[in-house]
Image 1 (cartoon, one colour):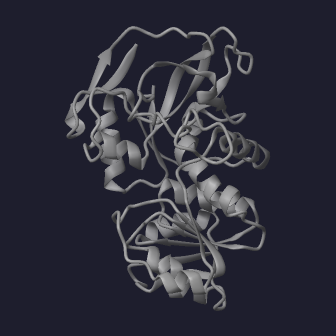
Image 2: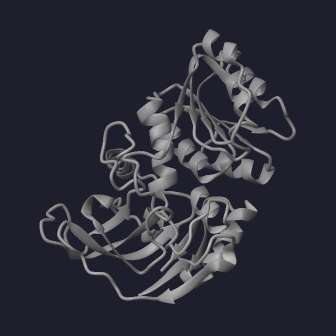
Length: 333
């Protein structure tokens, strides 16, 4: 089989297309023909050497079809379309140190390969009618947005949700919020992307370069009450504005670190307004199954930006790093 190996940490030139023997499924495992993958922030950190990882197979998100079933597996059959789970051992409930072992494309081999043999619970069935490329977008970005808004946020019809930027988590959050009957305020520094966000369903748009005090602007758009939920992907450079935007008793789903890793936070603003902050690190297999049921029932389709063949994985990462895309950057095998 063909696969990509990251020979040494330090940059995209270390990504090599190689051939190795195809695995076979052991007891309790599935052999999956991987047909598509998608790129995420964590994958980019690994591939560019910002998070050192040597001689591994990158990419945490993979989708394809089951071609062989190991002894003792009755939840899947040959021919099933499946999508990987980001945390293969986090089956449900709250995370524990034990269930968050083995990060794909980092601690263990990921899915930039034609075949993968994994425990059956490392996959769920893909949404009915999805292409493999569409299914491959769900494991990280989709489940993160779902857990942020639905599991932890318990978003309801009539709520107001603030999504930051036009990254994949924010796009899924926008779609899930609209699916729940919520109103969405979306930010971006690009008027072109803001127009695409409007077409995707955003009710109000803020160009945060033109309006530096965008947290106050978001609050004004709610007649001074504040938003119910913030999908916070920026980190230290945006958290203060997110707190300003949030209503008393509101919820901030803290997901990303796009602007860094440390920040000063106004503690009085948090406790005096009883703002609840949830740290989100993807979600469980059960979260993924719940999300897929909702996706199927509502006909939601992910936003695909660009696709590349496996041999052009370095070009895919360059496209991802450029931030010029709108929607997921994917790999087709």
